[in-house]
Amino acid sequence: MHYFIAILAPIFWGSTYSAVALYLGDLSPYWMAVWRALPAGILMLLISRRGLPLSLPRMLAVSFFNIAAFFLLLFIAAYRLPGAVAGTLGATLPLVLMLLQWLTEGKRPEPKLLSLALLGLFGVGLLLNPSTDIDWLGAGAMLLATFFVAQSTLWMKRWAAKDIFGLTAWQLVLGGAMLIPFAWILAGPPQAPTLHAVPGLIWVIVLNTAVGYWAYIRSITVLGPNRQSIIMFLNPLTAVTLGVLWIEETLQPLQWLGIAMILASLLWMKFSDKLTLPRSAKTAVAPSR
Picture (cartoon, rainbow, N blue to C red):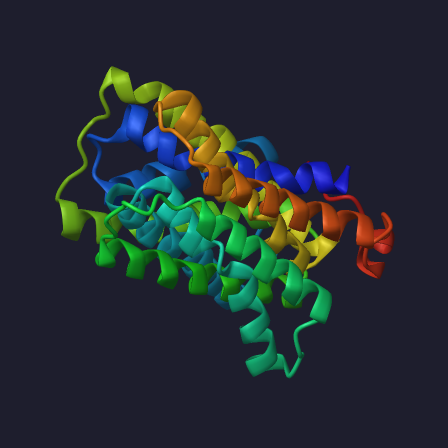
């Protein structure tokens, strides 16, 4: 069950690029970041009515890094890059996490997890279409977004809030509120979404964001940040799969090999653990829903 919940985040997040292409292309990426975060957080708080699960300074820091800065950069990348390119750059997350842990905590990368991260990253790299032109502003935005989410992931693991649902909801509300002035300055006043955009917004707000972020934050606590970051290789795999199914993209033989390598890295991690989780998974109290 822990692994099933863990894969919800990358699968839902991998649909972002297709949702943008099919329904949300006319919306400003800056206001799209607000639309994604704030309504999802408000909806979760209406359901749960939780107080702040961390001190206000910590809550503001993790909300800015994990939501405000990340969403802003993510949507810049999503509007400027093909899904496979954005997914490949985002797949550096396990390596960025290990590097940050080494630099800030003195924790050397575990050889098995480092090997899995490299195998999965190489597989994601094969998903790229060789003829794709890379927008360097979009690429820089995606790499910076990856750094922000890596740092916030380590904070959430270190600070260990017990109320996962509340932590998710308040991050989305605070981060979404922080995004409003940026969106207003960069894109002007918000425009009402068209009816065509409504299905995409419902998908992005409810499943992609509310459910996806709850699953991700819970899995950081249960599985640990490094294992969860490797599971995130399913994000670009989902993006490419939906591109084939919904946007009529085609795959080359090397891209199929990349898919096989991603799946191999995930299966290797799953079965080499012999179905045992870190100690925190055995003792953690199931988060309230």
